[in-house]
Amino acid sequence: MGKLKEHLSKKIPDWRYNYRQLLDEKGDTVTSTVTIDKAYSGMKGVKGMICDTSSVTADAGLHVRGKHILDLVDLKPEEILYLLLIGELPDADALLDLQHELKERSTVPDYVWNVLSGMPKDSHPMAMFNTAILSMQKESKFAEAYDLVVSKGDYWESTLEDGLNIIAKLPAIGAAVYRTRFERERLEASDSVDWSENFLQMMGIDYSDDMLKMMQLYLMLHCDHEGGNVSTFSALTVNSALSDPYYSLSAGLNGLAGPLHGLANQNNLKFVLDILDHYKGVPSDEQLKEFSWERLNSGKVIPGYGHAVLRCPDPRFTAFMNFGKEHIKGSDVFDVVSKLFDIVPDVLKEHGKARNPWPNVDAASGSLLYHYGIKEFQFYTVLFSMSRSLGIVSQMVLARAMGMPLTRPKSLTYEALKEL
Ligand code: HAX
Image (tube, rainbow, N blue to C red; front, side, top):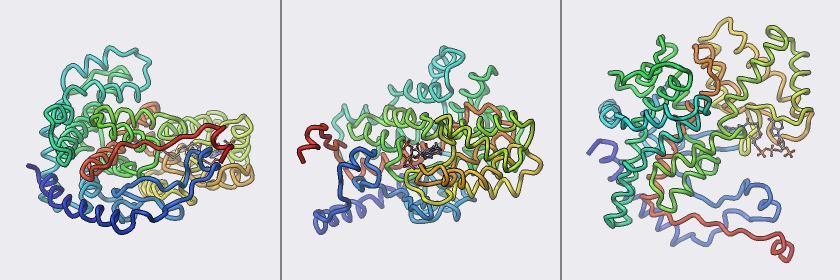
């Protein structure tokens, strides 16, 4: 048994006890009032689910297990996975143990490569990535355990097994999607036990220490954003039917492929490139304002701005900007991204629709990838997906450990609402 699982199995009994006690003592306490208005607005603000891995506050953004994301930016994705699952950071031994465990689980079945190469050449990289995950469903240890009538209290173990097996393979799958989709030969696994470095090597990119740091930052920053975002919520709902992690993660990541969610990072970079193309270089503030208004007036959103929960600049955006200011000089793309931060919030305020005029994580991430040579922006949401898988898997493991039941909110018809 790996140190992560050993540590987790020691924690679970206490968490179960606390959860039962809370239900006994405070089960009737009201968390939210649901109005017709909320029923028609995507249930925003309805506090009807549990997430212990992370929380998001409107004025400060993401906290992973109570720690603010800006205090975690030097961590590797593997450390974040440990933190998400256990609530504590790994020591050096536990980190190395986890890295080796992932390495041991990283071989991707050959049929996945056939599935990828058999897809149409112009498939979206997200369709390829999610299909690759789904195609491995027959490997599920959870589905196998369920058929053997394993006790409900043990479901978390095979969920963790599947989760680690999937996470371990994501660098190879992500890199293969990149190379297959953009017409390069797939590369075999590298020797590195570092999840991010392994990925860069299989991407076939000549990387510097700075680029490795950027990739580690990218793959940790998108890890989790509490439970109600579209990708996580979808994955958890599917998983609550005891569909295994392959089905559930793939389902959730299909939601991440939407332009109001993770696809905003590719759309933001395209927006920036369109600006540079239109003005043949970095435009003036006035021109940027004009370009933003033209986009709004054409009925489109400004990708990378606004948020359903946040009411401040996203600290994940701040983390990317801090990295960019330190490491990137002379990049028109990064300059436009910085300038947009000065211009767009005021434009959105004047426009008067968006409740949050500030940038989210997707307003800066693409400019860093572009600077380091990953210019195929259709690929960016795959990177987001690799990172978000850490949080989704963690949340599924905890949901099974706590024996969370089937998710099944009640819907009402228009007629029924009118009668209320
Ligand atoms: N540009 C233009 N209009 C915007 C806007 C933006 N960036 N953000 C919000 N609005 C508009 C909405 O479209 C909505 O208009 P309608 O009333 O005409 O429908 C109105 O403002 C109210 O929306 P809201 O309540 O402020 O925002 P929501 O909670 O409904 O939606 C979104 C939040 C993130 C989806 C929204 O701000 C948006 O579309 N942003 C642009 C796309 C984007 O950056 N998505 C990524 C978000 C972060 C994330 O999940 N990453 O994966």
